[in-house]
Image (cartoon, rainbow, N blue to C red):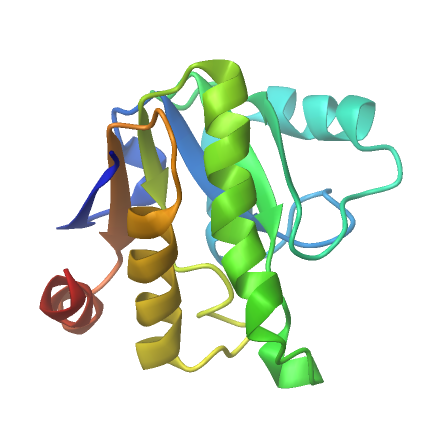
Amino acid sequence: MTEVTAALGDITTQRVDAVVNAANNRMRGGGGVDGAIHRAGGPAVLADCVARFPHGLATGDAGWTTAGRLPARWVIHTVGPNYAAGQDDRALLTSCYRRCLEVADELGATTVAFPLVSAGVYGWPLDDAVRVAVETLGATPSGVREARIVAFSQPVLDLALARL
């Protein structure tokens, strides 16, 4: 059973088997968490994205690459729904977390750090983003021992801790 935890910090410095990247469909880097992971991981992350995902990745899906210079071994990329652009299907957001756990299981990763997918520039309402993350990570059967939600600010951490 997966233990869902929450921590305040920078996802790019987490010492876990895999970090999750909230990517865009193109899989070529971007802003927010995506940009931070690509900058910290270096050019190897982008090169692996280009090689593994030449046509990008569908919303709600996930796939993995090397972590480059990150302390993690892998980056699991997932494309969340863009709420701000009208993609408000909660099932797509739930799918992101489920698919990430499936990919982690394929890799043999037992510790995974997650951002709150779609809660940044994609505008998913924060309270619901936390609810989806905690409920889905806790209810999805997986070999992952720890699914760590990494909050970038104290208010987000407090919200996550209240849901655990």
